[in-house]
Every structure is written in C-alpha cells, then in structure tokens.
Length: 114
Image 1 (cartoon, helix red, strand yellow):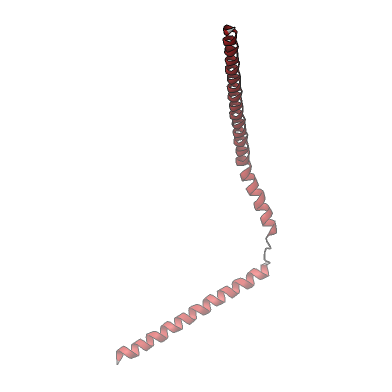
Image 2 (tube, one colour; image 1 turned 90 degrees about the vertical axis):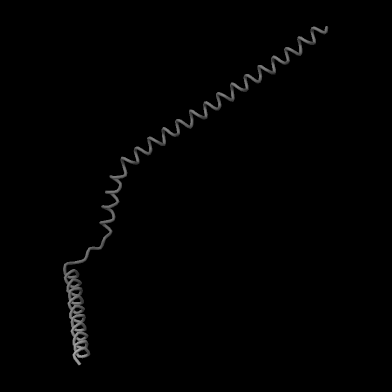
C-alpha cells in the first residue's frame, strides 16, 4: 500500500507539472498572439501613414482652392483708390521729412556761422 500512495503522489505531481506545462504553453501562445496582433496593428498603421503621405499634397491643393474661393477680391476701383492713398501718404511724408531736414540744417548754419 505504501507503493500505491507513492504512485498516487507521483501521479498528482505529474498532473500538476502537466498543468503547469499546459498553462505555460497557453501563456506563450497568448504572448505570441499579442505580438502578432501588435505587428498587424503596426503594419496597418504603416499602411495608413503611407496613404496619408500620398494624399497630403492633393489635400493641400484642394484646401488651397477652397480657401481661394473664400477670399473677397477687391475691385479695380478699390485697388486704384488704395494705391493712390498710399502713394499720397508716402510723398507727403517725404516732403515733410525733407522740409524738417532743411530747417534743421538752416538752424545749424546759423548757430555755427556766428
């Protein structure tokens, strides 16, 4: 009977070790499944990134066209009016600065000629 108990305990130990092996195999397969799933996801992301790269230039031109449609372009009359105002202000400023320069020069001549 003592032998039977040893046989039973060894059977139990064997079944425990078998269970551990099965569990480790399941864990290994789960890890490999996770790795393969991650690899598939990274492949899908890479494919999406390539498609995005290809579509970026076309999308940019499309968006550019849409934005140009939103622009309110001035009329020819408005452009000529604004241009004349700018030129008038520039010429007026130049005359003012020139007159101030001549005035200060005349003042300095009076001071140093005495």
